[in-house]
Length: 270
Image (cartoon, rainbow, N blue to C red):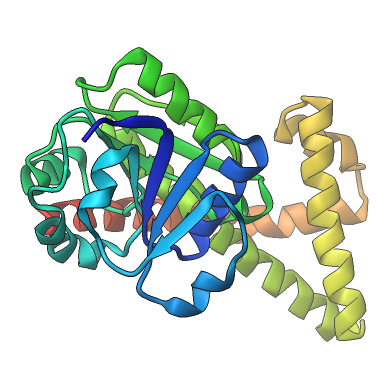
């Protein structure tokens, strides 16, 4: 079957898959989007570009690009379903955490593979994706992939899958760490006497505003921290407490633990 550059297939349609599809629709990148999803409750999305099916069929052989948006533990079963349904000219794009390109190549007997680590802010078009491709993926196809990833945020191409493991800890898991920090800031505000709603509003808006200032000013986090820290003031008092209690070590340990787990997951799926 002849491949169509105007067609893309998604296998799996969870939060991340749907965020990617929304970006593609918004930027009008593909005329036909096929979605393989066995949860029929997701079929009620109305768009003339979307075509939902419950099972993998021979029809996917017409799509130039195929996104694998399933849980890592489902991959081996998925590989069996894809057997004899792929052509070597198709591009497989995986967002499955911890599964490296050689593993995908071995199970699918397919050698045009891209591995992407997106993150959940993609759901509001503020994602950051780190990605790498196998040597068989051509420059023109990489340009298309870059456009896809930039449709729901920003993207960085890397040359080593080891960088993906590190990036998984920083950007992939990072939102979870930031939310935990916010949780504790909100709780601290409540403990000090603020009502829950006010404490949450102050903490969330402070994070949003600080991030926007960092982005627009193009100053370093260190420079902005120094600018808000007056000698003998409240910010300095709080930062001194952080330093005394080795806050830096907590952050380093958190990232290191996530990196180690990412590496473990990669080894488990060999």
